[in-house]
Length: 435
Image 1 (cartoon, rainbow, N blue to C red):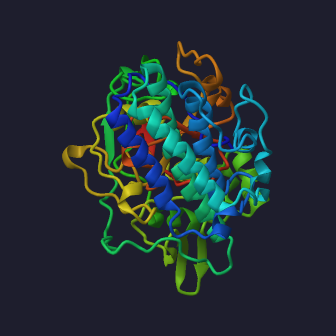
Image 2: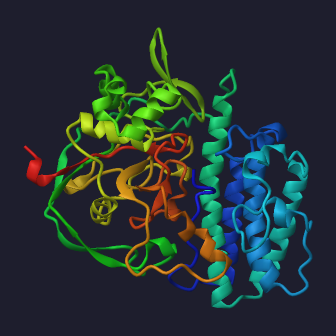
Image 3: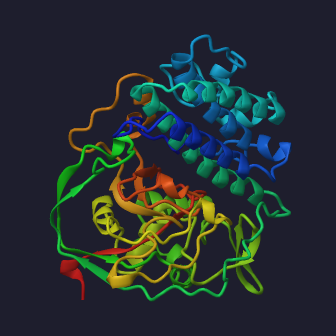
C-alpha cells in the first residue's frame, strides 16, 4: 500500500498568521489527541498488520514532521526532545535520513505512550513560541502542509485502530454509537445524472490550500456520461453477492480474481454472516448491517466487479470532479462522531448527493501526474510524486476525514487490493450506451 497516505506539499496561497495559524495548529493537534482519549497504552502500541501503524506512532510521526521540517529551520536554538526520534519516526523521507522498518513499528514499545505525549507537548510548546512571533510565508506554508498531513494521519489512525480492534476476538467497541444518529434513515433512490461532456477544466482552482498533486489546473475532453446520484448501498451490494458475484470470474479483473481466490473474499471487510442476518464491525462495535448505508471497506477490484455486474462502470476522476464541484456538502465527517457512514441524504435540484464525506469513492483512473506537473524541490518533494505508480485514485473523503480537509479537487490514492480504508462505490455509465 501507499505508505502514510502520502500527499504533495506546497499550498497554493500563503497561510494567514500568526494568531490564526497558531489557533489552527492547536485545534488540529487537539483533534488527534481527542481520537486517542479512550485508548489504553496497549491499544496505542500494537501494529495489526504491516500496512497499518500503531496509534502511538501516528502521534509521534506527525510531531516529527513539525520538529524536523519546521522547528529545525525556523526556531533558533531549538533543542530536540530526543535525537533518536529523527530516525525512529521518519516515515519515508530518504533525503532526511534513515527510517525504522515500517512493518516493525509495533515493536517500538519504548518510547512509551507517556513519553510520546511528552514529546508532543515539547514540540507544541516550541511551535507556539515560533508561531506567536510570526514566520515568513514559506515557513507558514510548510506549517499548513504539516497540519493537513496530521489530518491525514487522523484518518489513518482511525482506520488502523478499527482494524486492530476487529482482530480482537471480543470485537470491542472504541466509540459510543452517537445517540443523534437515527438508525431508521433510508437512502433516496439512485438515479442517473447526465453530463454532456466536452472540454472541461479540472484540478485546483487556486482558492485556498491545495496539495501539489491537484495542480496544475488543466483541460480535459470528456465524452457524455452519466453518474449515479449517490453511492452504492449495502443492500444493493448484497444483491450482487446473492447473485454469485464473488464466484463469477467474468466479472473480475485478472488481479482481482486472483485476490478473491487467494484471500477467500466473499463479502466486504468486517461483514459477517449470522443466523440472524449479516452484521458488520464498526468503531462502536458489531452491529446489524444497515441496508441503506453506503457499502464500505471494498477494494478497487470489488468496486469494479460490482460495476460490471450492474451494467455500469466506475467514473474517471475527471468525471467525478466536474460533478462534485457544485454538489452540496452534505456528507458525514470526522467531527460528526461515530466514524461510520450514514445513509445518503436527498440532494436538491437533481445534483449528486454525498459526494464529500462518508466513503472514499474508487475511480477507474490510475494515479499519475497532471500535465505540466513538477514535484517541489527538497525533502517535501518526496511527499507525493514518488508514489505515482501502481495506485488508483479515490475521491470525496470519508466519515473519518476532517470536514475542512476535503475538497472536490482532492486526490487520494491506494493500491487496488486495499480494503481497510473507508472505501466505497459510485457508478457511472457512458451516455452512448445508456438505455
